[in-house]
Length: 96
Image 1: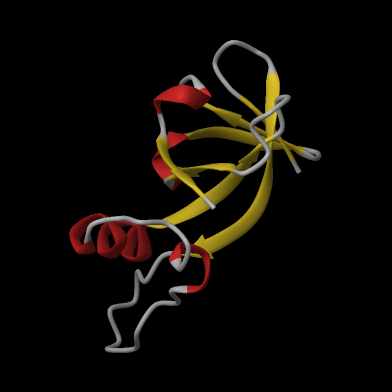
Image 2: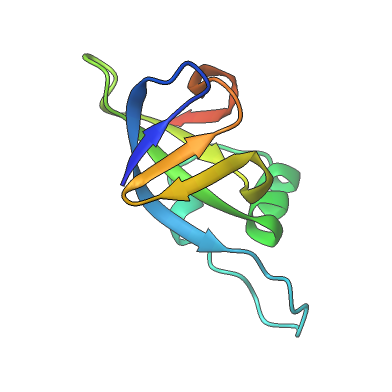
């Protein structure tokens, strides 16, 4: 899926989706999409609990750059486009 930020430009694509651990049933949420990111334990735990979308930057020379967006930062999903409520550069980021 393509990702459109507040500028209206499509500069990314979704490469992983983690559903948050809303049930609190004692099971551990997946660490699948966070393994390469160098996040603090608190930030990684917050992302696991809320859920997140991992986005690959598709701009020239930025193909190994990733952004992490929480569900409350998504405005809409229509067809094959995810629209965000801010600019891509302002979201949580990491290198893979």
